[in-house]
Length: 374
Image (cartoon, rainbow, N blue to C red):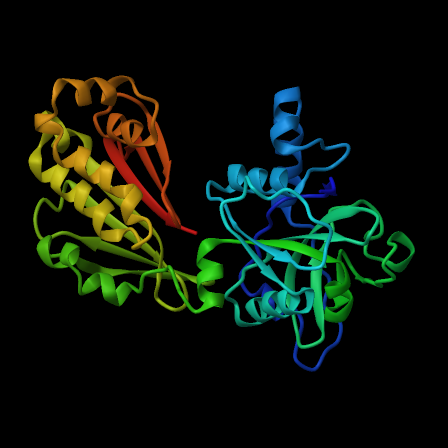
């Protein structure tokens, strides 16, 4: 196996409406400003790799990172490990550390990514390229039938310009962005990282749950959940929905962020800390039901221990109670946050993450559970 190092930045997010930068009757795109999140990621990466241990895991900012190191960095910064789409016919590199690798021909991979950008199922994606001599990372932002718009973190002219690569591909500058033909991109594409939900949409197996399905489910029915009057606000590609349970309304808040297809991208459950005192069974019931009822089918297996612990808090055996207090495993940390014993905890499930946080709101102490669907 070869060691190929990829220079450049990690994951980038497309801004709302950015997929329209390439119009159907245009072969060129308007200028794209350097995404501020790329600068933040570069600074964070430099800090992360300032020690030998950090460079072993995440690569060297002065030399680059292997595919596995890039994947690990992407997951660390985002909180969710991506799906790796790998182009066939390229030099073989280690991939055993990567959770999920799916192989495509280079042309099929570029076509898949372009289709995702055009339809909006992909909101910008990190791509590794290799010209036969050196590797690099770019962030795809938009596409049309012939071309792809990308950001290159390299200072000066893109490494995909003809004079900077050994593959003969020819990216063209447009302001702070670059355009490359899909045929040229297929010559150098090595791999790409997608969020699980993006891969689910492109593969025909969506992972995001429609809001309508949740409204017809057990959680909404049992707790008599309804939207509040005037509780919808829309901003760009996101609609925020505020809801209330039938009972204990002064102690419970629920907020959902929906995508343009009315699928849940983020769900927040707020519980007033005062109401949670003495292991209130109603608070435990709604907390465990929120986690168990909102996670995807794939996430349910990893969420099950958290659900069980929350529900059984009033009657844990001595050994389990000791693990809750002392074990560093995410499921126990989530429960400690629920109990108010630590400020915050975080758990990665399958296609979602769960964050538990103790916070103040309007002068009162609250506990918040957040599910983010990637």
